[in-house]
Length: 133
Image 1 (spheres, rainbow, N blue to C red):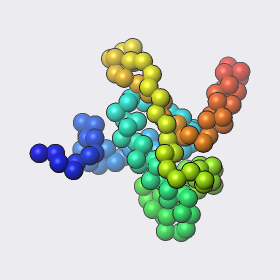
Image 2 (image 1 turned 90 degrees about the horizontal axis):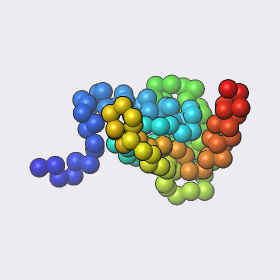
Image 3 (image 1 turned 120 degrees about the vertical axis):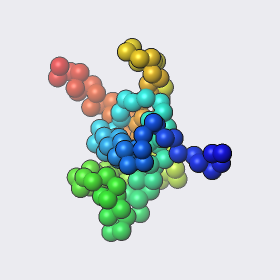
Image 4 (image 1 turned 60 degrees about the horizontal axis):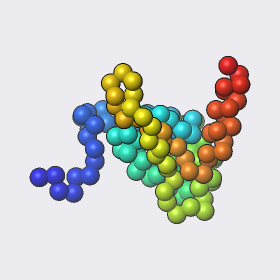
């Protein structure tokens, strides 16, 4: 029975799943919005929101916990300096999952996961990248 076992396994061992979620969280913090499968986005949301809560706490222990999970000091610095202050007045629900259509190669359901408070910043970056191309 799977009572009280909420974690989605994503067909990976515990170590592989932890590494995958850490990498996805790093990319989300770095880029503001990432495109991934719906299952991975749903598994990433509680991890990312826990990291924002650490960023809002802002003390040394929270910073060390974030660096230990993310394994990148510069990404943790951006979490504490940019992402967490943008969500300072919000009590929770820092991420938004927007479902897209199926992926063309294998029909996997795709989704965007992004920060709720930094949508304008993400859109400006996307427009600038399109203009550069």
